[in-house]
Image (cartoon, rainbow, N blue to C red; front, top):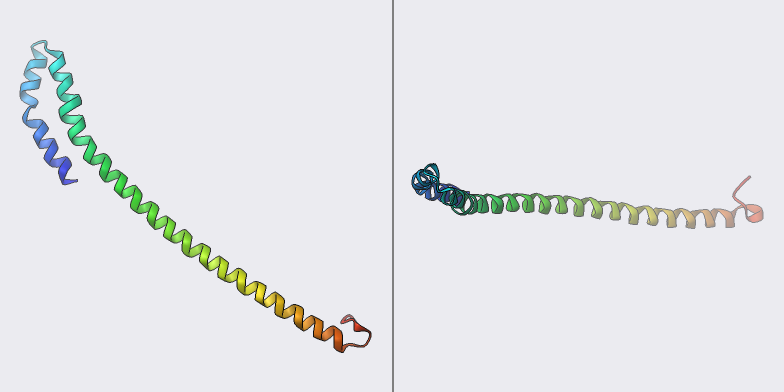
Length: 104
């Protein structure tokens, strides 16, 4: 962000000359100062900083999503293990009951 401040000061150094030329009818100089000196020098660092901020937030969101999905996967694996254990218990109970049915 400091680059944007430095470039803004650098662009403002030539502002008085560009404004004088613009006021005396030289619109090309005024427009070229705005487009070349100010917009390019100041907005480019601001855009880069914005992209870095967005990238950092996307990385944080991706990490949070990864942790959530890992936790959900772990829960799913535990549920499947419990289901397998319950099925084994059911089979044992069915074998122990007369007639082979747990319902009574």
